[in-house]
Image 1 (tube, each protein chain N blue to C red):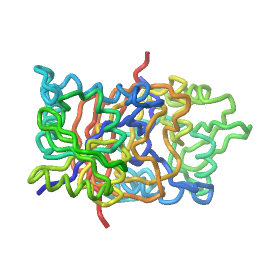
Image 2 (cartoon, one colour; image 1 turned 45 degrees about the vertical axis):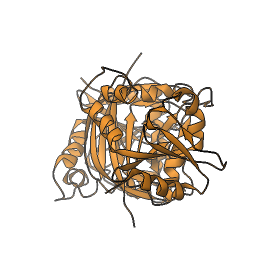
Image 3 (cartoon, rainbow over the protein chains, first blue to last red; image 1 turned 180 degrees about the horizontal axis):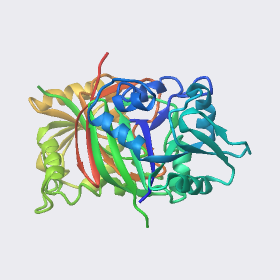
Image 4 (cartoon, each protein chain N blue to C red; image 1 turned 60 degrees about the vertical axis):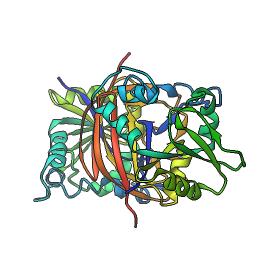
Length: 206
Length: 206
């Protein structure tokens, strides 16, 4: 059964990017630190067309996430920040639905990545991704605002936090404390290494 | 070797108390939720002079923390909030050093708990607790401001976060993002259950 899942790296103090993020500095100051755990992994390198890298549980977990994803949903800001760096062959190799307010023609890239721009909101983007994903999962590519929007809409089946043992001391928060609503989760799996803890959570629906 | 350690329950969105905390509402609205995991445990009940309760890894971990603590350091706000509810026999059974700006005579309670008020700052309180603890650990009883102060002073050897899978959506943050300093940790142990994940971290000193 196809699920809607999110994977995101977060600091101990809850940041997914450092301070002063912009199109030229998409992860903010020191935000790169949150992704250091993933770059050396074979699973991540393979996704980016590179050989070699470290194997083991962290790598298997990344590989698993990539293999499960049949389509992606992405926030507009993440698309704007990523479009340049991803180049002609973005690392998704699947349909990507970008939630935006701006009408735009679909964009076809090399290696199977297509960007479709959805102006009908988060629920419509998730629904279209679900149809495109078939039996596979719909993966939320980020950023935090998109993930929180899908969670708030009651459409998120699972979130996996990659908790990086660092305090960034400022930046962009994953959970930005809007509205004072309590949301309960169940922890379904915890794995990791000294440099990252993977916390898999399932929102508990009332 | 005696260590300076902190144990604290925190929500997924980084709160250690809910919104609207006060002397009459010390954990804030919904903040009680963060401690639900501990109340049923035999280790916690024993600390409070109660029989029975659930045994197992979560309980052993609480018991271990209590047994390791030879003395406590506490923030003034936590003392003010706790003094009433703790009654005549507070659950520490050891010397407690309260960091405050106000001179005050020591307070001796039943069951081995003494409160000593230290006006010379966090480092002096830790030093006095270290002498009182002998071979045992100095435990930071909280709150968050005290823990962050000891961490910032370079005096914290270990912090164990009890990560509760809930978003509180507001309240008192453990890491309040002061100063934009990056602090690195090493994750030394991860244990837990579906209702709480215990993340043991060691600050990495430059």
